[in-house]
Length: 192
Ligand code: SF4
Ligand code: SF4
Image 1: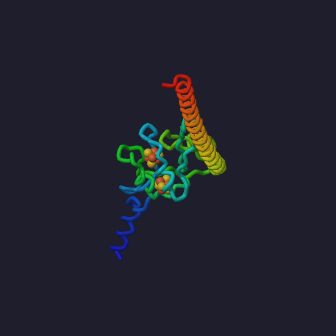
Image 2: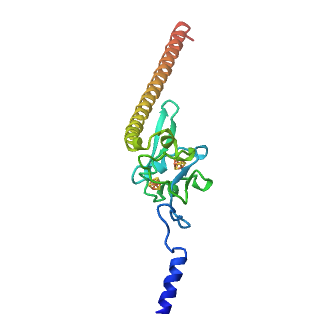
Image 3: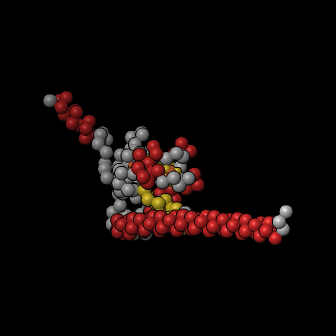
């Protein structure tokens, strides 16, 4: 009885063993697969990260079709933290794509959208947390359209090249024909 009383007294006066979540959130364990961070200066725009991402949380928008200029965007709230993009990135060892050991706080209606250059263009352009999903839907559509424009541009360029090659070939054939006709005329005018 005394032992039990002392134990209760000890528990009443000692710090709680549990964490006071959500006021004191527990830190992620070492090696935690968290938010993906990106370094544009190291990127070679090979699109591999976008291709392997299961939920489509990484998207490149082609903002300049003529020069094939791309902008990286990432949706941390669509990401399932699977690490596939980092595994696929040929420049990951240099730090182009890194999986951090922390995650972003949940995005509530009143919370601020986290700003960080390494999260890509999309996140940094969103002002209101409540707009996040709607804007991502719009962005997906824009990114898809930009792909189509790039494909059309490539098709046009290919056709242009083919037409130029054909015109060059025809001009060469014509020049050859004219040279042969001229040589024939000269031979007929000056028989040996
Ligand atoms: S960790 Fe997985 S889900 Fe997240 S961006 Fe990379 S590939 Fe996509
Ligand atoms: S896989 Fe790496 S290098 Fe390739 S586009 Fe993605 S971030 Fe850039």
